[in-house]
Length: 295
Image (tube, rainbow, N blue to C red; front, side, top):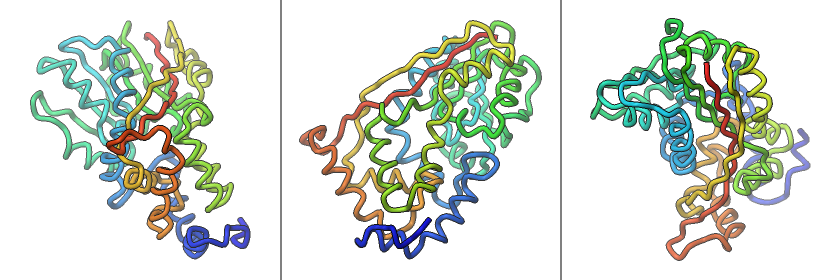
């Protein structure tokens, strides 16, 4: 990247001054595991990503047809959004596990797990090396994790191994950027002020389409594989505070930790002013692909 190509503005200067440092941190974050957060970022992820994820987590869990007493794995569980809802669905006679490669995310997941039911059991593990017995789960769920697996085929094979015969697999992955205007605005911001290399890293979150995941699941031995787009209107908190907070929780954002974040909120609030309610909340469409299968 040529730093001299950055805009001659306070935002461009802030990113230019710290670009090399942030690119090093981003490279560490997007390591072989695909998605890592360290320091205070996992707690920010829990805070700022939850409003965006919640409607899709509900769709994901509903698609698995969970019943009381079921055993469930939240694969690439992050801070545990899906595991918590699954635990509420399977009740005190069920069992929910969550696995993730990132220990810092798991610490937050443990801190936020409910205690109304038997504790959700979390384990640090890569998606292609799960510490569970064959056929251990009635359902395996994966919310926005498949696009970050270094080896998607190996991860799907492991998911097939730990899913009981007749059990369900369900995953969501983000659809193309053009179908989610908020994400498109994020990508444009990163490209403008941190360059196309950083924007390409950002775009990795949208790289695994339903067709790609469906193909990997079929190769792993799953049956009745289907991929359908799901578009939901999601209400976000006022963007002046939410937009910079959300960006700061993304591992590939080279804007994280810079003075540039102070200008992101007003810019996003202005961009989506026509979708803003009197209380400041903003309702925007987001599109994910729901991919389901049966073992």
